[in-house]
Image (cartoon, rainbow, N blue to C red):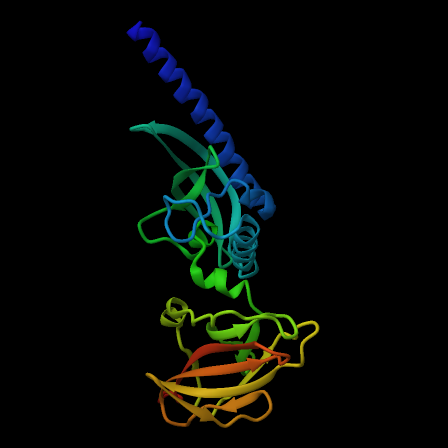
Amino acid sequence: MIVLLIMIIIKSDYVENVSIKNMVVNFLGDLQNGDFESAFENVAYFDESSDLPPKISFDNGKNIWIKRVEAQKEGGTFLKDFKNVKVWTDDGYPKANATIILIENSVEKTYKITFAFFKFNEKWKVQNMYASSQQTEYEKAISGYITSSENIKDKYPKIYISSNNKPIEWAKGHSNYTGKPYGDIGNTSFEDSEGIERLKPTVVKPNAIIEFKAEEVEELDKPRYKVMLRDGMNHTLYEINKNTIRVPSREDIYTFNINVDWGKGDNEIWYVFKVKVEGEKEGK
């Protein structure tokens, strides 16, 4: 009887491992072929905690994840090939590794990667993959983790900020935004403090021009702008010329708020960005 029970357990593990291996092969194959929508079907996405069901919807999670992986490919990083997919069970949990050939910033590299899985809707799916404890940007992109900042950004109109055609990263500040004419706002949406904290300042020259343009929203007015210079809790109105500002000449790190108002009731959002004013170095 005991022998029979052991045989049943072994057979059950074997069947499950074969199923997981097929899932991993399909996942990597979809990444290789650029079918990111199908690849996401095998992603155990999460937001607040890796061992809890996500609060973000499937469609929102998929859109954010696909944009991330597409951005990697557009930047010259993508999966070229894979081999040697192996799956086993360790203390009741599935483990797996594989060899991948990655084009990373247009350079071919080979990695031996390990997979982490999570049972999502009664099916094991890929939650993470990594070659070492320090994940690459590509590994972060294809992981199941959807940050709160990404979720926030996906809900609101985008703004395009640049200096000398160089994009400047932004995070969402406070907002009173409905996206509808005279919609009922309810409560103010507070700023994405996590995203603002992680913002890296973009290096610009003294007196550089910063340009910005927000998306237009159907049924609302054309966006109007106001800019504030942040200094801790202090916010000072900053001179603006249509949709541009000129940064200070003094070398320092500056944080700016751009207020965009689409009118017709509560339809305004603050966008936050940082610049590091830095002059030419001697010898250049």
